[in-house]
Image (cartoon, rainbow, N blue to C red):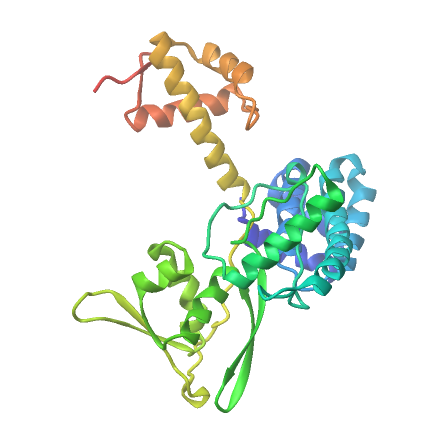
Length: 340
């Protein structure tokens, strides 16, 4: 099955191709249900990566798909687009309320916008954290307070690690413009205070794991703005700002793909399976031994979030993996917890 980025490339041809591209995509993806799930993820990724409020193309494509599959099949996608329109209106109203009362703590950046999602109708989003700058933190708090006043009892739960930032970087003899993820923006912003950072210090300042730093900083290294080396003493990676724009040597494909916000179907399944595993291990611990059908029925009865919707064949394959991982034993009739 193609991963979401491949599916996104396929969906891009919808506007360019005169033949029945939807039928071709369904053939590639396997069935209509998988197509709709994949489309929902691609749509969510596109909407969350937008730096403007234009959703005309997405609305037009959705209307065409509704003619083919029916409105009920694409209800979640309709709500996602409605969230985008509502977010634009709410952000405009709240900005007008907050701006006149801006204090010494800061004021709203004119380009600041938010996407307020109805979480139940969107695909699962990646969890994460970053160290939010104080002026951004003030904006989030001020916006959240006004939203609560307007929409009580509703409140906002921010995901500040997700989002898109438009940057213009000024050097001595010119500027460069980028559209990057929040983490990528935070990385380059640290070089305003000093020109060289140890990888561990930089990761801590941004609020991300040091293991994730290299990937997220690669856009700046590949663009020639940062130079990466290894410290001979600590053996840590070191990032140095190249201040002269004429010394920037940009590598091919320097503008790497932005951080992915939405989990793929495979990633969602892997996450769900971890939940199912905890239930299965609890069952065989408490009841000692269970046949396949009994485990299947108990999972349908007790696992409500995420909903257990697997077939017996899929469960059998999953349990076989737990056996091969040394967590369960199977004698042909019942499964037991493997004794250490």
